[in-house]
Image 1 (tube, one colour):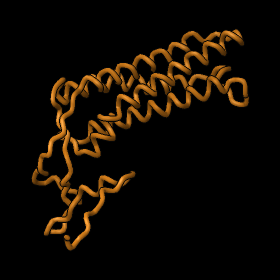
Image 2: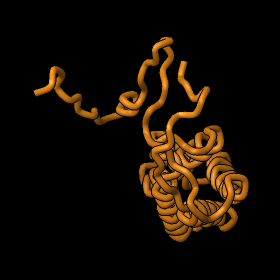
Image 3: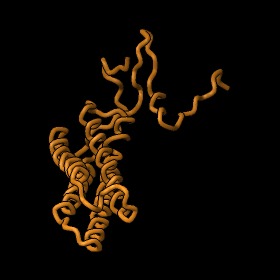
Image 4: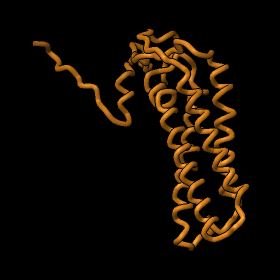
Length: 191
């Protein structure tokens, strides 16, 4: 039997901290896995495809919330089927843009915890954004059909957001990633 029991890998929000070890000089060094692009586009081409679609997604979602119309007016309980999908769409759009910011800010190869929070989850986040944009589109269409308000340009913003989210999903799924056990390069430390 060994002197020390094996340490189980923890799960949860801070589990990635198990991949850092202290060096002899007292610095923390990342010892976990890395992810590299294994096909598809270069980093620059990949981000050049993702960012315009992500910018259109967040711009359409924010612009839609800035335009006051009857379906989004406060105090009307009958328009919850408009408000709830829109708020979920906005939250998902912010989540997609946050993942793009993290993906852009981290150098390649990506550390495992960065990959799992950005490249691996981006298709799912963008799918939720598209689904909620479509639900908001339907909710507003129903509201305008029942109450007779003019709102075609406003409904179109949800369609634009849905299309942009689907583009982000398509571009992020097209990029293939490969896990590599690459050792930490010099200077890849966390202070």
